[in-house]
Image 1 (cartoon, rainbow, N blue to C red):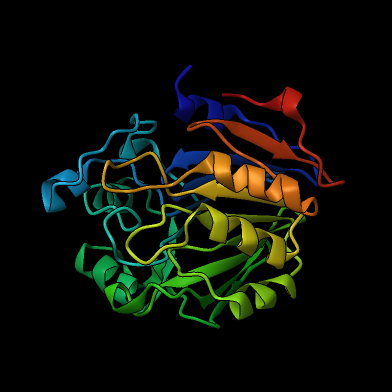
Image 2 (spheres, rainbow, N blue to C red):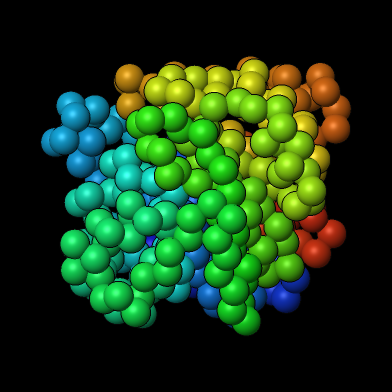
Length: 266
């Protein structure tokens, strides 16, 4: 069964949340009402065309099969704002709401997204509806992406923090702890201004999350990232549990913040 079919057929009970790693910094989420959200999905090989960064990881979803209710983009870099996939989602998923900082909103409009489908999400900006709460926070990606954001997300009764691309700042992750995330998902490639594995593990511990999940590795030869070091550091710390996904793997977290491994669908 293709991943798109597995995600479509995935059934989530009340109080649970389905989570799938799409590779790089991309994740798919689904709640018990069938609401779906993606953040930073990199589905194409546009980085090879634009910058010579060849994709080494498998293609998991076709852009035309991606029809989420919500689509968050943390900044304009091609592995977050997928220049070859976003126009196809705009065209094939007319109900999708796109959220992201000002630079991403400008590019979405340029690529044909209707203004009513675009929601600006800058740092300290918020989006609410009956299904979820999203808040943009600081991500320090330097001059490479000056309005890059991290994301606090409440969905399906759970709280998740996505670091986006950011350098390590102790005060930032102490602020994250006030959000009380169940899961902190952190970029650990260690290059281009991002945290390395050790810094990512320290960030996960400071965030106070029950689980720390590494991402943003194994997609390009030009990136680093050591998930084993990330996990070992967290195990030695003993407070935040390491949680790794394989690319395309679906996990379901329940009301007790435990993962129902028997319900994995990929």
